Picture 1 (cartoon, rainbow over the protein chains, first blue to last red):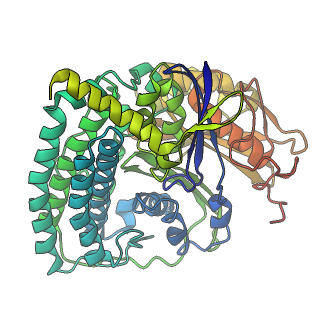
Picture 2: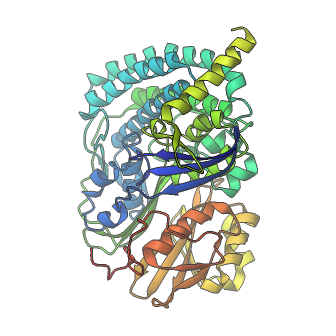
Picture 3: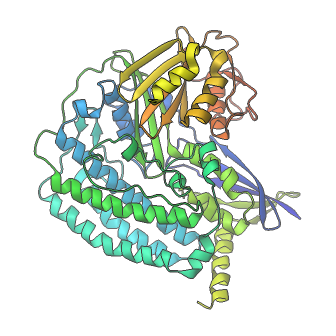
Length: 398
Length: 144
């Protein structure tokens, strides 16, 4: 019996400009093909940016994604600063440090969010609750420093909008100190758990060659042995003045992707600690008034991979072209190879492994091909996934 | 050998204009007939990663910038191609070389009306199914 499985991910993708719609074609339990359809909520942000002046665009682009609302404005200001010959030519020292602190805090909260949802999808609801519990203090830090849990409005061309106050620094440090034992716990819970290993190893594998051919970026690429990270390859902020490591795994399966994200959080904690330690006194903004004509490209390593913005200026106060490419634009397309050949109970976690949006999976629907009758909904799919974990647990006697 | 010298040597006379505005950004233009060979050399021989392509409507014609990232050195090579026939813009597709280019070519096709010859699946990516034919939102003459 063949089923046509329709998996609408949406209605609003936090990362790209559009939600996505996956159609999995399955034979029995096995996924044989997948169609990815996007564009349901295309907002035309590139076009909209051409009608905003350079100072308004950061507010616009940080609303592309609620999760990485530091990456898009950061990539945009880097693109504009590229017209001045680079970030370091125009941005004051202290602002560089603040930029890195905000960017890495964002990575921690984004990876914790992913970890929680990945846990939920495979039936580890405790991981979900705990990961999100420990994400809260990170968001509190954002609220303290920027006034918002998301959409921080910190970046502007030539600097940052707000300073980190002296009295905030001990709170930030304390939050990081308390986060590390939680990360240790998650690391242990994932690395040492035989069920998680059985559930995630050799599932949703992307080979090194597939990563190259599909131009995949970020943790998804690094889990397949492709050693790329914009923070090291084209350093921005103070990434080149502090010590940290690029985490690379070889296997390419979901377990490797999980390991990469968990280990990256340690690196981010260390990067923020060092930045806070070295944070110099001084100006935070160079008050740029005029943007010269020219073309610039800015890119940052968002939690999901390279986020790249292109800006063309004709010397007026508005960009005449603004191209935005979020990492999921490349990563989601690779689901075509990662999910095909797997089972339907693994599809939920495989499609989630590249870390796209999550308002999604409760809207998963399975349709009977001949009658178009709904036979499974999103919760059923999550249940299928969770039942597989339960069976594995019983099999292993855990 | 430095990557830029290698690219210059491999592409030779195909390069029309070579620009370096900032240390990590290289822009060069080629004729549209040379795009597939140029991309093959950059992607397969030099080992660049295809980052994205930017399509735009300029007074001279429709322009595509193919951004290639050379991650070992943190440099972006942007290949500029001008398609001067705005009525029937056409260029060879690079998607047959590697699947990572499929989506962006579909996007440029619907947003700017550039036809990519040899694309395996040239259908709409973002615009609605009932969006009128021949109405390209990123063209400068588009009425919003």
